[in-house]
Amino acid sequence: MASIPPSTDPVFLAKKQSVIDVIKARRCREAHYINSNFNNYSDLIGMLFEFSKTFDCDASYLDSLLAPFSDADLIANGIYYNKIGGVITNPNFVIKCTGISIVIDQGGAYRELDVTYDSTVSSISVSNNTLVGILNIGGRAKVDLLAVGAGSCINILLVKSCGTYISELTKITENSCVNHTGVDEDAVFGGYECVINATEPS
Image 1 (cartoon, rainbow, N blue to C red):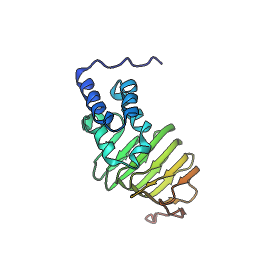
Image 2: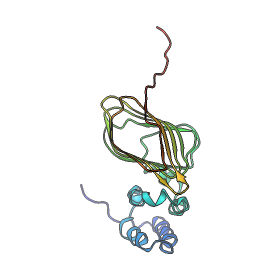
Image 3: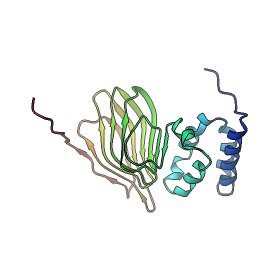
Image 4: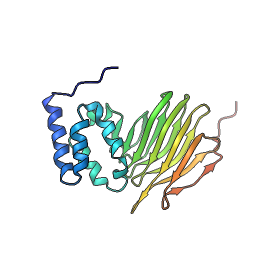
């Protein structure tokens, strides 16, 4: 598959320069990365994945990266920022969202989902034979329930903490497939639990 040539759109280039100007004063290496690798709107998600460890400790840094971009720019790339309520389907990044639930039902390989920056999530459900590479819960995010359906799996589950940025996963439904789990020392992980939702009798 041919690579996408760098954008020459002056609006995009102005947004890219805004990000570089903010970042270079704080993190020169990352400003160089952005200058070399952020060449189209489709590169937004790669930029966020590249620096996701930094976001777990510095929420203002994430705000600086996202500030130049419109809501449409972000959603087009699976990035949901500052949303309240509702269901989000097949996102890549969930940032500063409250009172939401997340559905992953894309099927096949699914690179990564990051839930971060004070997001509160009632549930994350994975279904339709979807194989999630990494689920990262960081930046003071709180997820009440993770449920992985039959045939689906999460390869790596991370629950992060960094200073006061302590994240939480309250419980995982019993029999959910999670191959590897990494929980930071101060992070909160409630373990597996039998969860049965009552249904009306037939």
